[in-house]
Image (cartoon, rainbow, N blue to C red; front, side, top):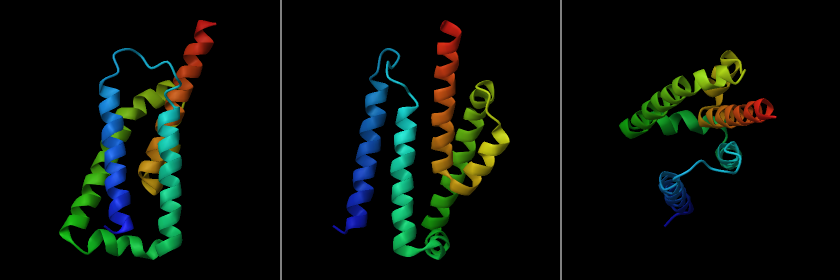
Length: 134
């Protein structure tokens, strides 16, 4: 199995296990929730940097557009980002964040920007709840 396939399968397994573990959580999580998306953003940023160093920026577009599966993956990713941003933006605004700044970041960085937005939203919500409590 090539290294790229191993990394892809490993990523799928880790993501599936993480989602299954979250579904089994009965109560509220005690640890700061913003750590999970922040950690995912760091992992994604490192993987992105590795891909850019290994193949450069100019190799991205041909990978996405040379087959119908590439185009389908691209459309799926864009739609998922748009839906996730739509669902998150009200919480982000309520937490005092400017959605215009975040939409630009998400447009240009994709999931990385969305993960950073989610981490920041969760961090600010926790900070506001702590400030209100005492």
